[in-house]
Amino acid sequence: MFYHDGGKLQYPVRVEKPSPIFAKALQQAIGGIQGEVRVCLQYLFQAWGARGPAKYRDMLLETGTEEMAHIEMLATAVALNLEGAPLEQEEAAKDPVVMAAMGGMNIQHAIGTCMAAMPVDSEGVPFNCSHVYASGNVAADMLANATAESTGRMLAVQLWKMTDDPGMKDMLSYMIARDTMHQNQWLAAWEELGGPENHPIPNSFPQENENSDYAYAFQSFGIGDDFETPRGEWTKGKSFDGKGSNSVVRMRPLGDKPNLGAASPKTAAQKGQMKK
Image (cartoon, rainbow, N blue to C red; front, side, top):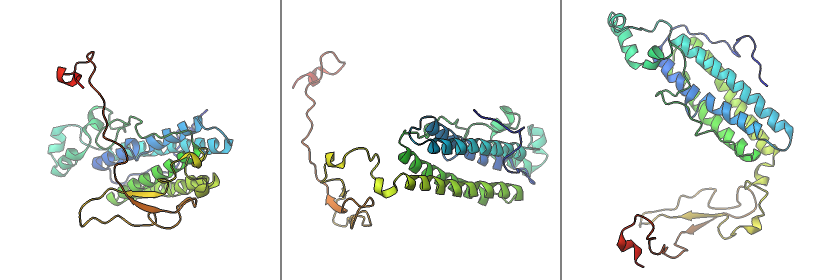
């Protein structure tokens, strides 16, 4: 069950110099693949399907609900940045600076929403849940969440750099700080679930059932006299999970050339394909 508090914002949102172009950029933080709609739905669906200790479900619900508040803040910021934007070509033509601004704004803000935010990205593409990850494996979800917060923080940092409006910088500095907390929060939960010692995910599958020859071997597919295998901690020493030793294997085909047989006469294949 969810509640709201009389329309009050989680953090103040103010705009001193409205910018329709920045309103368009802010749409990415709402409906883009790095945006708040994505993480809101991701954390909520992970929570609604979480099994095991209730604290992980509760934590996900808390943070998913917070992301709703972030969507509200960003939608407010979009609306405030659209204040005073030209609605008619004649009005815009009086001022070449305004005309240039209108040329960069999302026209749907004017003709589709009466100057309000939309559940779309900066290009106007609707959010479609393609990047909502909820696996049911809490450890896997925690790592996916840390990645989501990393790319979200990257976006917020870029937006912070794009604006010189003090109010927008203040709001974005708050959201960047929350991304910092959430990154650490998800990784702390992952470590509490076992961290490296419980890798690989899922740890419920007995590793003795794996083909052990390939569990810790970096496979190199490069060819050519000047090719060098990319070397790093993944090609030498103890593996990240501490259960094996990394190595490099120059890959070669291990299977035979596939023979799929003749095409079925019941298909729309050519007659020549129906011969063995």
